[in-house]
Image (cartoon, rainbow, N blue to C red):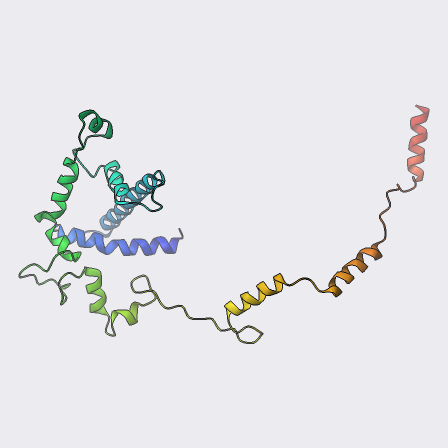
Length: 236
């Protein structure tokens, strides 16, 4: 991951962390505190994703991670408490769902009502005067912000970026040459690779080989220094 990509992911994670803090009742924080919380959230998400990928790799029945893999990853990371281990569940002969039930009650409870509204999972609260309120309940804060800051519409301004819809692929035109596009050029290259070599090229290669002459395996005549060395060895 490059520094630019890491900076982009951190910038995208920062607004959700700020919204969570605001929903929890915090209205101000030091930048260093927010940066630390963003880093902790990113590391925890990477830990959950890595654990889920590990469980998915051991399950050969499905090529992609399943909900069960995510549940086991959350259990490995300590999300569900209290919870018996797999050995304890096998010993008692029943599945322990206390941790999962407590987690669902916490998520759906009154403590997280505000963050659910900001995430677009519930309608706006009665009497709320939040600046992010946009016509049409059920919109998350990111969609609301994009609509608020886009005068020409979300699709036209954010199209082709990470915040909008992917742009349509347009053909790349090549000026000059036989091919008018990259696809045609690639097809011409494949055709030339499939065609056999021309007779002129093969005859030229054979003439070059014949002009080189046969390689001789005879050794060159010994020099005067070599004869002197042989005579010294004979005398010894």
